[in-house]
Length: 96
Image (cartoon, rainbow, N blue to C red; front, side, top):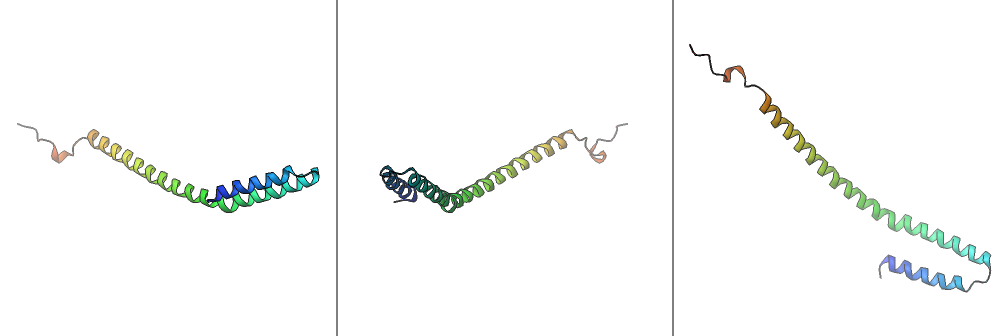
């Protein structure tokens, strides 16, 4: 059973307990306890995996941006070399 299924099972068990509560104060205390558990679960289980995946995504995006920048630079270099006049030594001498 994965962690989300386990979490769902625990929620179902707690909901069954809450249904049996007769006192609103007890209900409020249970809600506070469950919120603390949910916060802990998110902080300890969900956040680290999310951060790991986000870091990997950013690395991949960085690589793609580097490739795009290189492509733009190569394109600009090709344009510049086409627009530059040839050096004087490469020009044909005037014929007499």
